[in-house]
Image (cartoon, rainbow, N blue to C red):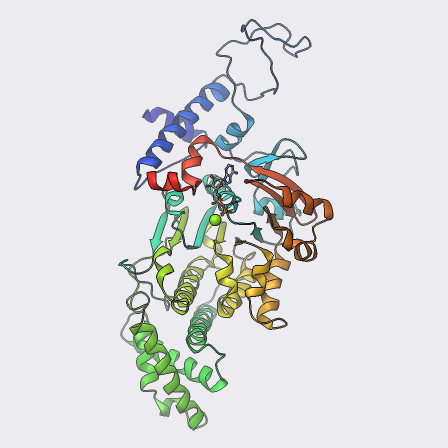
Length: 507
Ligand SMILES: Nc1ncnc2c1ncn2[C@@H]1O[C@H](COP(=O)(O)OP(=O)(O)O)[C@@H](O)[C@H]1O
Ligand SMILES: [Mg+2]
């Protein structure tokens, strides 16, 4: 296709699309989209007809204005009398002020109650004081369009300069989206050569959460805490219980020893270093104060626990130096975790904890621009206390590092997957929802009514709308305001966002 069009479009800041690894669907979509850009450019920019007046303006015979009091009277407009829909316009020129809340953002779709298009950009909304926090929860029954909504929001924000990370893509449905946006997919699991070193330092931010310069000392502490938190979470998944204080002491000592050994050899520590350290701890260095039979026993228990990590189902995935890097400058990075689906639940939880921790280490930094972080399988996060705990603490850092988190859940009842009633874990799960500044509610089954009204603060009228929603419709609650939005897709986006089987097999 014509390169000139690309240059023209790009000089206008319309779209920049690099289709690495394109397959047939992407190529077709690519062609369609370029055509669309070309047409949008021809009609709306070249002829300076960006002020489109909606409604039937011309008689069908093409001879002048139909409406008597048309502002243009009977004058004919030169050029081809064709129109672009406001939506196509908005998708081609993503950052435009909204007719609804007046804050610029990416066009998501049609505001069905207010009229006009609905725009969304969390950072702009936060700056305008419309939302009070930096996280969203998307709720909705299967097949009602949650993923489509998240994909379209993400794509359009990424095309206007934001970044994105998809923490776990169980269905592999984001690969094509990442390719479309010129980003990367990291495939983890059996059959993949990819290995992730969970003890990697991550990207050191230039400032801390209080906007003070990140010193060496502070950074060392941050890294040590993150590593310890992860190892503790892994041990707790494997042991199915909370660790004792002697075990935590042993864990922390083993980690310090492993780091010292690796650094002495001028390389990054890996899990086998840690296992070696707890297999033969240096009791002298541990000090007589800490050298109790309880601590000695703890080392033995931990050794048994962690050898299961490198010998079992996850062998080769997390137990050596990383074979991939997380490119924090890429527009989007997604983790395809499709092949983890066949693993036992315990192994899946561990894998997810490792990926989450590794990715967080790379993105908790304000140096790479504003970023959406998407948890597609929210229920898996809620199902694991360690993962939930990490998430709660990570969400607290979100604003300082320019991160906007999106958690996708099927139903509110999923919150009760977390821990026992009354437990700290359950409270954490509810706090994730309670703290979410944006709530996007797709169709819900009627049995969710009480919970929805109570935890989401939906009014009776809003609830009535939610139960009658069709695919693609959602209620967007932005702090106190709520909007009924029909998420729209442009023709080229359909094959990229669609999860329908027929399209999948064509891909
Ligand atoms: N806004 C929309 N407009 C048209 N069709 C849609 C829309 N959202 C979803 N769909 C259709 O519904 C299917 C399922 O959507 P999906 O986003 O995967 O649902 P969920 O993630 O909630 O299970 C999509 O493949 C698509 O065919
Ligand atoms: Mg989905």
